[in-house]
Length: 454
Image (cartoon, rainbow, N blue to C red; front, side, top):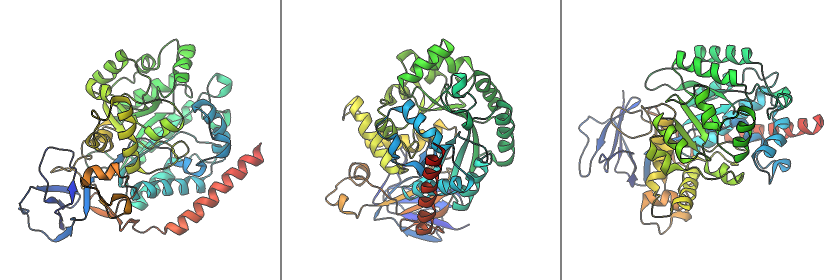
């Protein structure tokens, strides 16, 4: 196996206290040495990469997304709405998804994420209309093609409008179909152990779109199969009101009632927790994915990151759907997290180190991964490298702080499991012009189907 030295980075964030001022040594798919200040590698080196013009970080980890929503960015009918009304507008549009659209949306979202320094992406796909029963299979195929690490959550909706839920009936599935397909996907694709490239988790969409029995059965399967579970929770006050009316419970009480309050769970958004709920979530070691851009766009609120971390919860970061962000740029999301958390806690109490931690080890821990998220000996060689030669960085003095404060948008190089996947800002093996052409046509076709269905 080739031994590579990323030598003398302009700046480096390892996510640990170890000195790596002179770089990182990689062999195969792992980091095997951190080279401290003024030192040389103790290993025999086969290739040297001059990193003196790069800020080096662990690969960024996106803990919540909806890839299919790249097809409905800035959708006119959904503008200027809050969550429930926004969803009701877009569900009928998304019901027109087909397999070609799903494949293109997934590939484009993953390419956009990789170009922004992301090496592990989680997607929450819960909308499976007739004809799209193999949506997750298509996503796995796209991730394997690109060589990116992915955690696909088999989402579900089983509670339609006529049963008191939010989604229209033609976008939901019955419980047995959901359970059978979940078990099939785990069997066919879920990889276990360190270095896993493709993993599965189970992800009922939200308390207002699935039945209580499905939530409980999902928890049972997750425990038996030793996999993670994921859902949206406490994104808006409307959701809290729904849970109180439907179940007579606040969302966190409902979560405990259905067997989800444990270390196998990570939640998207997690904005509207009270102090007692934060304490319980921390004690249960639940993961929370902060989604700043989406939360700002839909005016949902601000996650209480510092209190959650202090209580023991694992706080990560996600871009959320590309119809509520409306992008899939992970390094930009780190900047948004820094700023919105400063708005809550003050500029002296939230640093760029905090934001980078949420986007790396925070996301990894939230999703139950201990082999990624930091640059440390024995960890996976997932690495992002950013140049600071754009006009926006001119005059910057602290390179690591400048990465966020000056607004980096694109990685120059990205390595996943020891393999270069992005070089000179381009995803290797991807004809971006052709992908954009196909994706734009698919977006137009989806919008046309929605207009015809009215």
